[in-house]
Length: 283
Image (cartoon, rainbow, N blue to C red; front, side, top):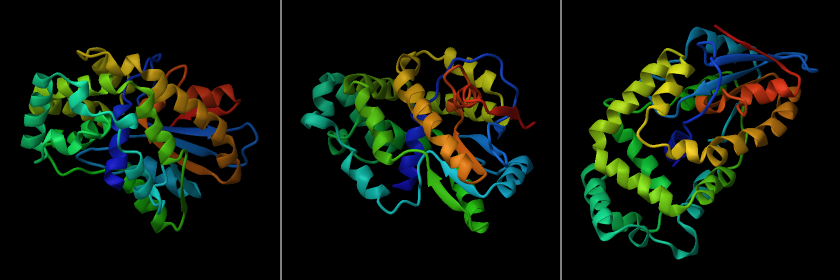
């Protein structure tokens, strides 16, 4: 279930921003902070989650790790299970035509080993998230899990920026029918096509090239994520903007959130600057 929670972040992956330095790690100082904190852009699934020396150095300089969710929260699994299904009794087979439902059914049987009927009441985005590991040509690794390992080895607290219910509520704000259509598109394109797109994304991430990632998503055949960027990214970023000052004031903090949340006028980096912090790239 923890792995499933990590996959949700993959659904938030489009942004607009000016040219950005090629780095995923940013130093946050000033505005009353006695010691700097760091913001790091993560990726939720990858083939190689090895942390670079500069990231390990930042972890050593900080006293706690803050991720999107506290993955060690004992209530995480229970809360996720409570919010995994669509509201008001809606079902996938009522959101799709018989033909599209059959397409999804065959796709799920092939790649997950069970029928669409078994996930008929589940939010379509949740089903999509379950398919992402299948797009990798390697065993799945998680940057967040690596960050947690380091934090635990340093006997540091691991905290979350938001509760799992807040994150899952995002997928109620986007019409279920729209989510279901995205699942159909994924099934029609096939794992091979989507796997190729995932490999391109991972290559851009490895180069710490946010501009290249932006171009990759801009050239995507679907503008779905851009259409719902406010729900997927911007609202959450603003919530975090109100919470981060208290967190950073208490202890120098290593903050790890999906790379899509960093850049742009509504991104975490700019929102911290708007509060008066100095935000500098760590190259």
